[in-house]
Image (tube, rainbow, N blue to C red; front, side, top):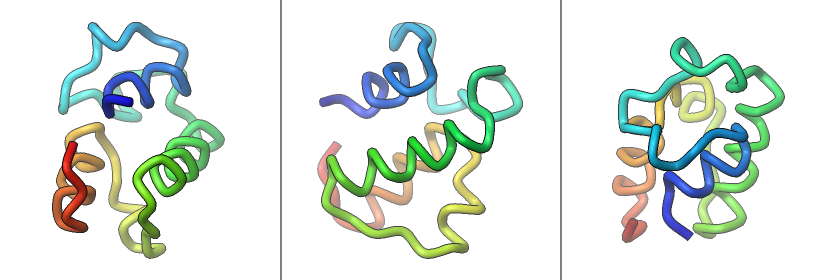
Length: 75
């Protein structure tokens, strides 16, 4: 599953409209519950664990991509 598809399924938006700049500020559906669902899905799909700081600082799709890359996840 592509990263954009994962975000789109949780946020109930089209994957085509998501960019690395898509964020809590730009998407109404990205509320606190959606954020936890995104974190949970990322951890499950990509087999990683995020620290509290990483979770709090992940504010955009691009941030998620950078964190996954830092954990050596090919996306």
